[in-house]
Image (tube, rainbow, N blue to C red; front, side, top):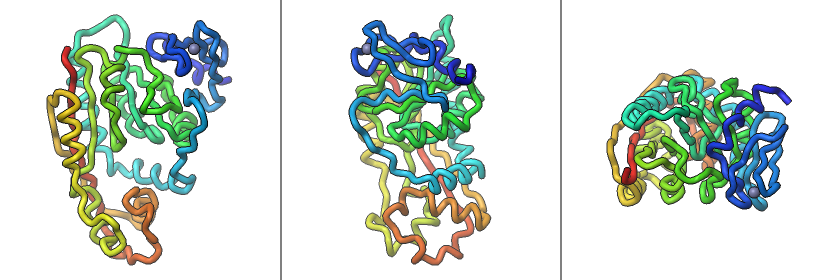
Length: 287
Ligand SMILES: [Zn+2]
């Protein structure tokens, strides 16, 4: 096993919890182990599967992964990553400094684009998890950073100890606020990114005839956020870029909006630009 991949879990006893008994997990050879003897192998790619029971949540195929990578590398999402880092740096600056490095949890990290940017910019320890094993496997293989602990895990039962995280990121992903609250330190921040009605409006306009839901509203998500924590800040971030034919094809293949649409039946030649637009919400619970 590559020592750098094992080093991703070097400080995990500070924050990981055994999914069976809840005790701290620590690195033991090429496993994570708790004091009760539950053991979890570190996969050779450098991640750990902490899902209990049978799950099969791999919704993306390999082609979709390649497309997602192409889109992320285009810089389309870079302003959103910038806004997340800025919100995070503010949070890290405001919270009392401690002897240990801050811990940032990326909940529903997918193949880890945002986790990686955050790690590079802030040098915080990052624990990133997703329920999709395929996503985590790819993230763990591709990501050279040693400071990210990659996990296959369930949002409904996050295998982290109580009160260990400085911030939780929840980017284009479902939320479980009671779990976020539990794992955060007092005064820790949740940073949630939710698309606006303007998100991918060029794609939506061309696919309008095939979409089940013509208009998107994020109001329900915003209301749930405001009801679940104390909102501190809200910024809208928008970015429009010109599409090359390769990027256009990748975007069509990776956009969840189109997963149930026969994309081959639509004339995409008019799709020359794409917009991503999202709200970055920052919230906390009583310090
Ligand atoms: Zn255990």
